[in-house]
Image (spheres, rainbow, N blue to C red):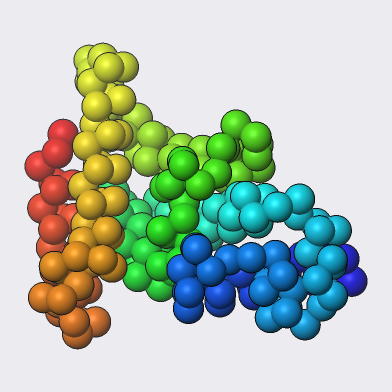
Length: 194
């Protein structure tokens, strides 16, 4: 029952943020939407930041699941890098509330929420492992590997942000056009990045 209450509070929070933005998130309104007493959310969350941290953890967990499955699939490293990138963009499109919260350090001090921090590290590790695999056997310095990770992450994150909140979302409204464009960008990038 306690796990159900926690899930109800988080689900109500996602719905509320989707409708009213983060400014509309309040413990009282979350409780009302979850159909529980106004004190019930405090059994699991101390404050709004705790709720946001739990949402960040959930979001990174979902993202990591998608990326891990893509990375474990068939294909060359370049193909799997493109697949993980596509999963990243598709996650952002499918879960915009989570995506918009996950990369906002001013909202959640991750140092105070180790589970959220660990979930983020899990997603990041997928990319690091693929870059390690891509550069295996070559004399690539750790600094260059770190730069490659940052470069891949930047391209994919930028593409995702432009798709959900920018001009690319406007340009590629049809899902099939959007998917074709994202696939082409990521395949071109993964082929030429190393």
